[in-house]
Image 1 (tube, rainbow, N blue to C red):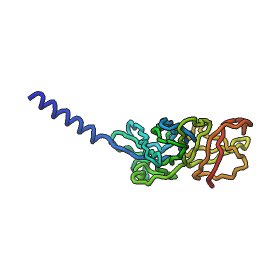
Image 2 (image 1 turned 180 degrees about the vertical axis):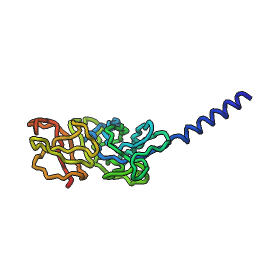
Image 3 (image 1 turned 30 degrees about the vertical axis):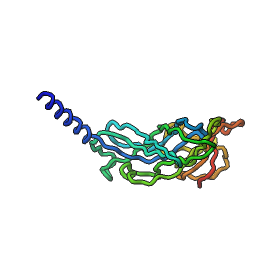
Image 4 (image 1 turned 90 degrees about the vertical axis):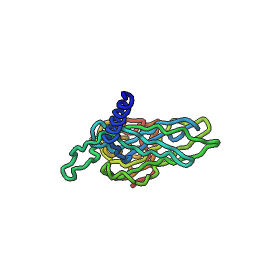
Length: 222
């Protein structure tokens, strides 16, 4: 009898836990990752995602891979209690970006080959609107059987372009405000505009640009 009562109480508690949690999918504003990796080697991928207004949110990168691509489906698991974040809507929405990371699984490659890097993205989205968004391609990672060059990181995402007091141009992943979140543009004559999706890579130069040797080289973007 006691065992039966204990089992019923346990099921009740589990049910209460399940109904008191929710999952909020979010979009990726910026992603950067190693340009080359060795086959079978999991690799760290930086993800800048819109945060959520929720109680005790826990981030999940949702990394998966198949024979063509690595795909991130980021989300937050949090308590299922509504919080007023905006008087206009009375709904959850992403109030700022979170600079975090996900671990991509090891990829197969009998000879050098490329995989796409994919995730849902949107210029600005309510976290609840991220559900059902089709994923987009941020770029590619080259997988080698061995001997991968770790010196360069591919990068892509929505950025704002800013200039400091010395007119040095930097790109800042949208939604990040930390002083060191912005990357110096390698081409200081670049006329890239803010609020655009940009692709390129981060690498180290021998001649400093704006006093820094780690810079962002733009490949595409308006």
